[in-house]
Amino acid sequence: MTRGLAMICLAAGTLLSLASCVTPQELRQQDESQCTSYGFKPGTDDFANCLQRESLARRYGSPPVAPLPPWYGPVWYGPRPFFF
Image (cartoon, rainbow, N blue to C red; front, side):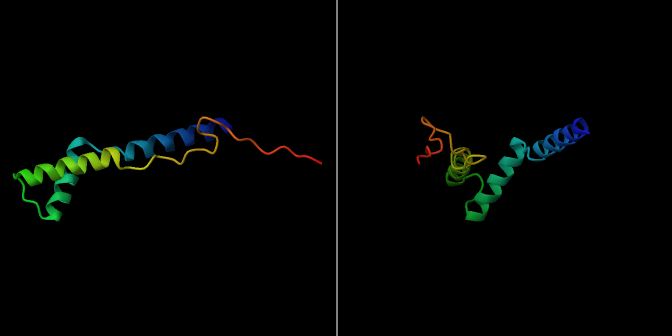
């Protein structure tokens, strides 16, 4: 039973990770539509700058995938000792 459950979880995780994949062409289309919605005209320097800013914002502006665990960092602070 546990092996079957593990296989189901593995298959579900694989499907979820594949569903979140976006091709570079799709990212470019999303950036172009966003820059067009800002009012920039395709083929201009301002439009190219907007595309670059959108790409950089996606690369460096996104939060971490998951919150960091409480023990992450240079020091782990365990539970306080119990004194009578």
